[in-house]
Length: 532
Image (cartoon, rainbow, N blue to C red; front, side):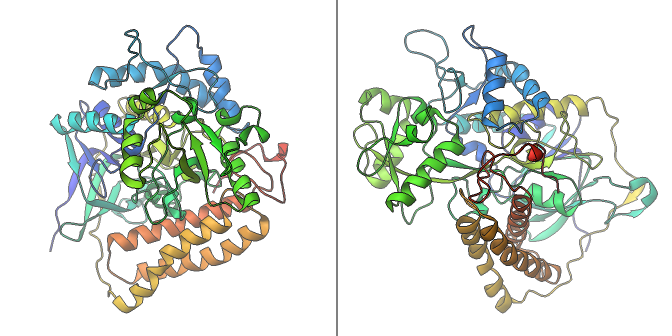
């Protein structure tokens, strides 16, 4: 039976801010297919509370934002990428405003209410109260749905990129080129060919490989894993940022407590009510995330406590409720905590992948006709640790730059290349699957306990041996069975965990998010990217 094939000039895998912004920018240039493995709004963007950092006031400057980013990145940022992001940021903010994103304004004036977060020297963060990402996601989705050249696909899970290893025909002309992707439809449970002239990976991060993460269930590193299997260059996977403040709520999915609460004046205290972060860094609660996370981790271990407090009770109660309505409502409903009157129980949790698929300043990967943007890409902006509220900015700036690059390129259809249908032969061994699926919990537990906020050579080597076995076992099972979304997710998470540990083992120093007990100092010989 011949399955339906989908063809377009541009295939975008991922429906967050990077993917949708790019789709809207490219829609006048040709047909755009956007695929999402679940609901189109189930993205990291949708859960982003804080905002977008950019320079718009006379009291701020590009130089200041650049320096803050470089300092947070622990000398590993690519300065040219940071300069591009910061200088082009104001124009991209204006794009969102023109499309209908209503950023919060001050009640005292008509000016935008700019927030401050850890690592920033001034207030420069545009936000929509404490649900910035959800508002941006809604506006971009509405616009994408209205455009006749954009087709959106829900519940379509990309399996692998289609490269010269798959195609038939003129192979000499097809070396190291991406022709689209094989995509599994959860609706008909079939694998379809999505052929495209240009393919863009915008699949977000992979922090769900850790047992405790602020990310949605969908953040399983799919784009990075697909690129890795296709032989595309990957960089700096050891740098996984842990957010200092996730709501401590045993038995429930972790809920993010925005960095903006600390920027607003929140204080982190131990269970005796003592503020302690300034013992670790003079900037206290406004230090970069890696420092605050390690301070909390250290305090919890030293005192044998299972969480700390984030205290907002010294601030104006009404203003706290008005500024953070989503967080206020969630805490009150779920754990009966009034954040304006009660301290919030918090713990660090895996949050953001600073590494990813290596790209140029125009989003080009090491494979022809394959681009990447957003958290799945390594543009060099974040270095060893991401500065708060730079992630949405990076996604906007570099997805826009991809669109500008693609508009200068010839349209490709690869009519001379034959793409075979997916070979569905295979037997689903349910007995074996029940055993294999337990590998998911093992991966998350191993990564949290051995590859977390504080690492050592010994724990990394122990984790590597076990993850390598799980990775090989999962890949072997995948090769001889039928496709399911659960299997695809497990396969990608095993690959992401493998890459994180492999990269961490190559960096015998402490820098940014990567802290080694047995190598506590930073060393100049490691002032380079870790490339797979």
